Image (cartoon, rainbow, N blue to C red):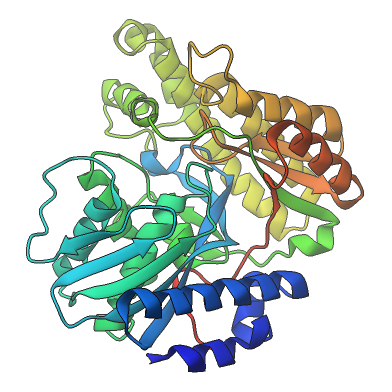
Length: 425
């Protein structure tokens, strides 16, 4: 912990090595982050009247390969990005967590009762479930005060909820356990917290946010997923990674998300497995005549998507490691087409007038055809798309999409090496 005034001095207007590592070297961005941290350090002092605090940062994530593969114990390609949640926090010597999250109502969690009884994803329920996960590992918990500010847009597909979850895990880890919580364990706790609230997500989002960097993850053994860092520098390709928020929200779409893994698992069950990973594309295709009436056509199509995209991740990783970037881009487009045609997570069925993701993909096709790649990003149905944009088309691409979806909704992202961490100035 350190005094608020001392931390503001060390931030030094953004000119410090830690900020440059997690936010890049653009002077304007560093200054903006310095102002952000300073504002919420001062806000913490005003709200809680405490001067000894610790700073934390937890990134959002971008999924690059493997769309809806993780919940079937498949493979993914992902990266931690510079849009993050930050926290100013301090142990308060009680058994109560008090959080002011900017833009949301303040809330408290009494750690003497860690059972979730209202099965709903709320910040309070997540904190309660994360605290239980910490204790289940034999680690300590305690009350703390915090001010949290997020730059990971809610419902954007950049995993604001996962970023929040592993941020809370990092706070418990550093305030009460000397930072002993392993990043992958932190991710697992975050996933279990969502499951406790009856939102059955996979483990990719939390792992990418907790571990950091540009990584591929193999979830075949869910107890010990294999996380591998990739040594690849996008800056040298002449392309930029752009995420566009098309304006839709993931709020209220739990039924759509839960149906997707549920349908995949229904196919797997009919073919003698719990999930699709042990099966092959050939197994699925051969099984269609006998299972079609039981599971329905959409479930089969989604299972075909899984088999294709799971195998594609291996090919994408190999292409990047071999510096075959154009091959990689081709596979990004293949992945996007598979999500559209087979996985069917581009828009909500029946909402014919609200197809913002599909519109964003169409505009990307029109601007970038033959010179980049584009696909749905994250869970789908609403929210964001992803594009690899040649730098000479970057201004055209951003101006075209922002003319439709609004200024500031295109984000040129920076893949940061650090996951959810204590900010060391």
